[in-house]
Length: 182
Image (tube, rainbow, N blue to C red):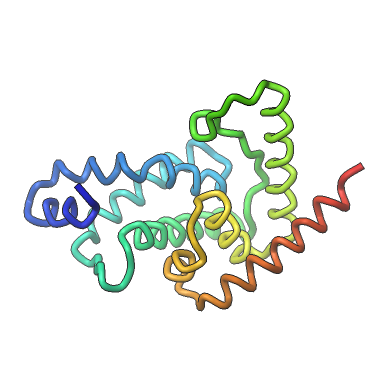
């Protein structure tokens, strides 16, 4: 059953089907929010609030304006940014843990360690040199695998802005990572 069919069932009174949507999007939203908060506890709390907000506003979803995935990412992004803005005026310092359950492979332990180190350096560089909006765009693109069109819809910014942000952010992050290599 696709998202639209599930939504129709929920709106028709079959509230138990909401668990299907939560199960479908939980892991990717968790990863996205955790990349912004660096706290499992905050991520869990935010996800509960976000899923409640999605449920309460499900009747407002319009498939003609955006896909359901885009719509929930917009809600998630706005809710998480509001949380971060209340907590502080900048993103929290964090370390990224390479999630083996999502990124399964046959790499040996040493290769995984190298990959984890590379990811950590990139994220720290992103945090250091990018503005929050550009950080969000990069996170959506590279960690949540959203296309430029989906990011544009999710954030409500022009597509050209997304492309420019990705290009300039990649250059800044690359320069920062290279300047910190020995």
